[in-house]
Image 1 (spheres, rainbow, N blue to C red):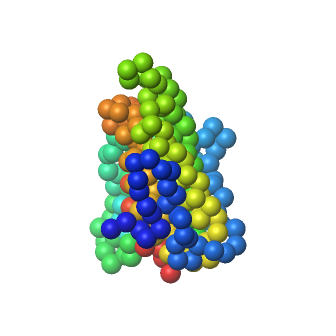
Image 2: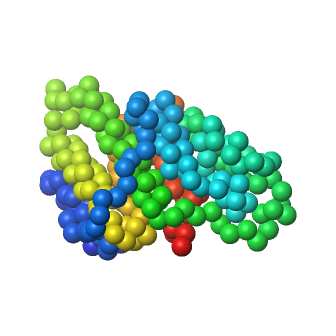
Image 3: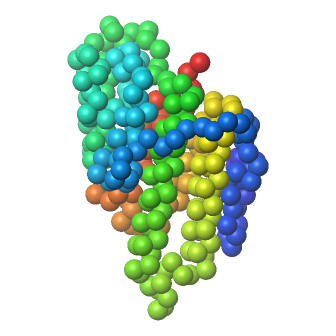
Length: 232
C-alpha cells in the first residue's frame, strides 16, 4: 500500500511528501555526512556510513547479528569477526560482519541505531540517489530513440521530474523531523522505492555488479542490517 502522502501519474511530477508524514514538522534535522568526492563511487557510501556510526559501539552491535560496517572501521569492533562475503558491498568498501563467538551472540539484542542516526543514514542514501539521478540524466542524454534523446521523451522527462521532486521533498522532510522514529520508518521505504526507480533508468547496465547503481542495493542492505525499527 502506498503511503497516503504519495501519488503517482505518468505525466506529472509528484512529490512523495505532498503532506508531511507523522512527526515531520520541527527543528532542523540531519546533515549528510559524506566526503568531498560525493556519495557515488570512490568509497562515498563507506564514508557516509562511517560518519553515521561514529558514536556507535560496534563491538556490542556485532554480538547482536550481521551488521554493515565500512572496512576501514572494522578495527573498532575489538573482537574476532565472522565475515560474510558480499561482492556488491565489498565494491563499496562495506563489510558484513558479526561476532565470531556463538556464546557472545547468544541472547544479544539485535543491532539497532537511534532514530536520529537512522535519519542521518537516510540523508546519506538521499544524497547518493541525488547524484545517481544526475548521472542517469547524463546517461539518457547520450542515447536516442527515433532521433530523439531519451531524456527528452515525455514519459522519461516526467519520470525524471518526479524523482527530482520526490528527493527534494524527502530531504526537506528529513531536516524537519520532530518525531525521528516515525520519519525514519517512512523514509526507509520511500528510499527503497526511489532507488530502484533510479536504477532502471540505466537500463540493463544498472543491474551489473560493476555499475555504480549497485549502490542502490548496498544502501538497502546497510539499512536492513541496522534495523528498520530505531532503538529506544
